[in-house]
Length: 187
Image (cartoon, rainbow, N blue to C red):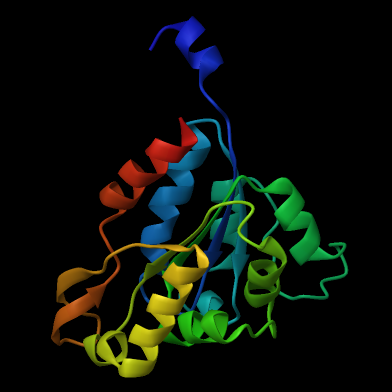
């Protein structure tokens, strides 16, 4: 890419939210790619996500402090400031728990509060990752449908061997496919 094309390339602010799934490790590749492309990334993680991937990893890859709690002393009204800053929100991976909480409008954590503060003025994308039973459960299906109706973009899930050893639907979509979709918006 020539220097003139690089200068024209849009540099975006991306909020990447991670929830408690083994697929968190795959999001590291996405963060790395975004930063290498010159985008700014802020990571928000649930406490459950931090059982799968460390805060130091997310901070090192993004170059920004990790945000976890709604009332972290170092941050000021996180959910509002994130919405002012971001060009795009991506929950990756999104567990059934998080998807169902978002659809119910619960703001008991930073991800839920950020979602409610968004009002779909900016893209809010969700990349599910879970066991097939949880993915196909009628409550999760209804929640995914409602989130789509509200204006969220929901990635399809992959199919194959799941973390629990089962084979079926529910895998986080391949990072290359998520990346391709992001490029449509971030260019």
